[in-house]
Image (cartoon, rainbow, N blue to C red; front, side, top):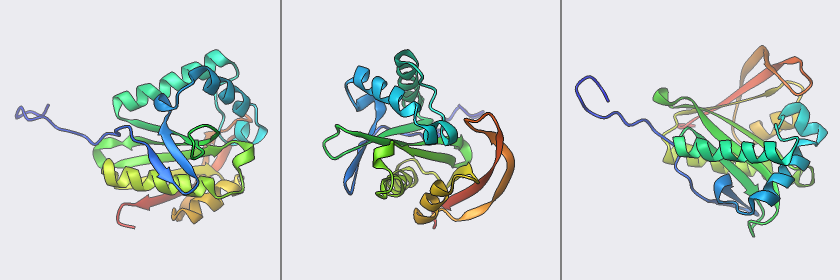
Length: 194
């Protein structure tokens, strides 16, 4: 509430299912079969590529269940939109795309994504990133969405480029990745006006 008694509404993320070409995006809380999904997340977390560039803190089913609960809580707060990337039947887990507010009042969000090994190389990360980007601009009034990835993660760089996120620069030693080392990151961003 502001000093004059009026209520200030900041943009928030409202759960929605999104359809794409050959995939669906669904909030994790709506995916169903939580025990099965927790087991899948444990298997995904063990993937060497994912554990290096996008560590998923789910070494056990209990950890995966906590991770899933965190995704639901983010939706409830309206500050994290975390989608499971699924096949058209909402059955097979292909990956995930998440967008969160970095500065909600200023309309700045951050976005990230990952794919299970079997889903890589089919353009799913690019198409999922494009779908969630469009959704965040049109439904939550994001004005700028930033994407950062380790400089060594060339696959993620290609996804960002294909999804219309131009490279803006390099952040030096900005994030500690799964190997415990701080890596330089490329910063890409899109504007709602792009």
